[in-house]
Amino acid sequence: MIINILSLETLTSKTQDQITKLYRQLNADNKQRSLFEILQASNNVSVFAAIADDCVVGIAILSTYKVISGYRGMVDDVVVDVSQRGNGIGKKLMQRLLKEAKLMGLDEVFLFTGHHRKPAISLYTSLGFTLRKSGLYNLTIN
Amino acid sequence: MIINILSLETLTSKTQDQITKLYRQLNADNKQRSLFEILQASNNVSVFAAIADDCVVGIAILSTYKVISGYRGMVDDVVVDVSQRGNGIGKKLMQRLLKEAKLMGLDEVFLFTGHHRKPAISLYTSLGFTLRKSGLYNLTIN
Image 1 (spheres, rainbow over the protein chains, first blue to last red):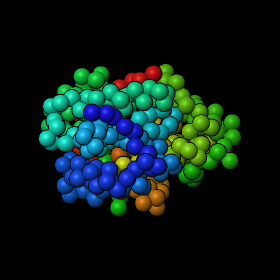
Image 2 (cartoon, chains in turn red, cyan):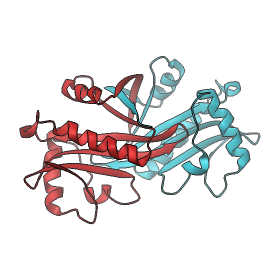
Image 3 (cartoon, rainbow over the protein chains, first blue to last red):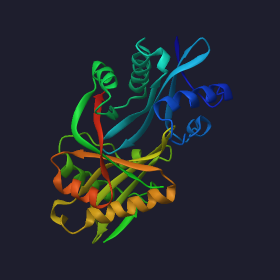
Image 4 (cartoon, rainbow over the protein chains, first blue to last red):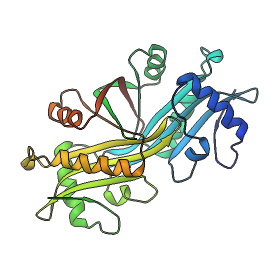
């Protein structure tokens, strides 16, 4: 199993199809933004893909931005194929993501996950993430 | 009082100084990233400034990025001058920010705030934000 950072230059429709199916395991109903859109240079986002036997078996996305309080990363869309869970793929994806975050010079990486998602919380805390005393709020715009 | 979106072209050192002092009210100890760095075109961030009598009396920052699950905005660094609180400046800043978020075509706007920050929570929920059943986790990198 290897971890690749996807790029627009090397993205194939086969990879897009595999990720579309994989992401449906995380959320079957949500409209998905395409990787061709996400990987545009103007979008400061890195897509990490775990690949085994020429198949994408896991992904994680790191988005970055600078504000007064720091140079920040947000982790979204972390998913590992249901048939491959328990093999440490999520951990390897996140370790690679955090290595890149360090190389980029980020001050801090944030993520949020449902209070009921115990295996995800266990993974993130094992990597050093700590729960903040903050509430996460959202507003749907369109 | 007017709300402006700051740009690198019109940014002055006077505005930077005013915002540096204003932001210290939110966090006196944190290292601050400069607006000259934040307003670079490659950083997808809009800085909203409330201006009264030629002084910046409030700011809010919207950062945007696209991932598979949507086109997202994160709100950070919301601060209103302590002498001006209770005058609806925070609400006007956020209303302008949300208007721009809609114009940009964002799917969703996120923010987080300390569970103890009752006036902030009251403002955000009055604008339609809802608390998610998720925990926010962070990891300091550098």
